[in-house]
Amino acid sequence: MADAPVPAVPAPLELAGYAPVYSGKVRDLYAPLDPATGAPRDDLLLLVASDRISAFDFVLDRPVPDKGEVLTRMSLWWFEQLADLVPNHVVSTDVPDAVAGRAVLVRRLEMLPVECVARAYLTGGGLREYRTDGHVSGLRLPAGLTDGSRLPEPLFTPSTKAPQGEHDEPMSYAAVEAALGPELAARARDLTTRILARGNEIAAERGILIADTKVEFGLEGGELVLADEVLTPDSSRFWPADQWEPGHPQPSFDKEFVREWLLSPASGWDKASGEAPPPLPDDVLERTRAKYVEAYERLTGRPFAAGPVA
Ligand code: PZK
Image (cartoon, rainbow, N blue to C red; front, side, top):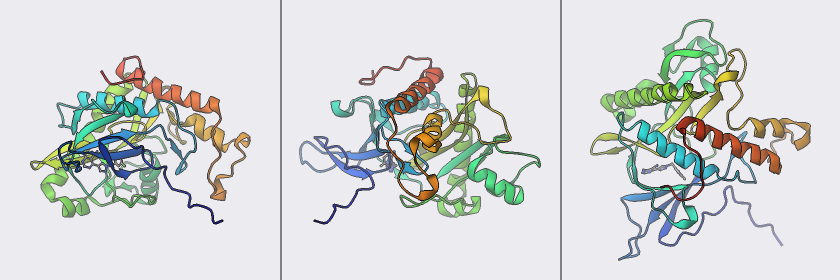
């Protein structure tokens, strides 16, 4: 018998009263069904964070317990911290029991066709651009910066929204203006950099640096509304502040144990093989869960407790 095709992502959960709309690598979107007609509503979405984790561009086989809840709560907390800067899409955290604590009902917005990225520290793709010609996203930077250097101020480094499985490509600011119009482009740029600056003002006092972040905006009545998850370790690079040392790649606050184990002889995995990584052992999953919880508790000053959002 022929093998069944291996799905890229698991089938989304069956949720009574909701229809699946879209599944990403680690999150799923549903539309609530109108109880009167049974038809999907076009004004609301249920955003569900799973416990899935990715590393080296693979979604790993085993979930990290409570990851979806920790990231959902962290994002909700950031929305509150940012509420004076930008409105957000949140409607309610009253969600089905099966996804309690890790789902949010949101307004369905017209999403911008641009990935809004800001960088406060130089690494990754920004560092590669800098090494090529001293510019990042068309902006000239001082000489002598290295991997992990703090930038004079957060930079807006937008990218294209690539189809799933492909990598986003850097986008010039002129291309953002062409896509959005100059007024909206300037507003998106200002908000994106201010969100990261505010994030770092808060996080640095609590031992976490946020190197860069990707935010999603939608439009409502011509105004930008902050959507999706914000300032989580899945949308941002979190670094432990006490280990920050420019000149080499910084350890990841959340994924360090995962990457370390996958690259160690214990995993038996060869990153260069193109093969999927093996399942993580229990202790690596447990220590990784503890890092997500630690990030949440340090940032918010609140103890993490699984269950419905109060
Ligand atoms: C929306 N995504 C990304 C998130 C996924 C994919 N408020 C909104 N209105 C309209 N669209 C979106 C949102 C939000 N947030 C977000 N794609 C569309 C995404 C989570 C799971 F599968």
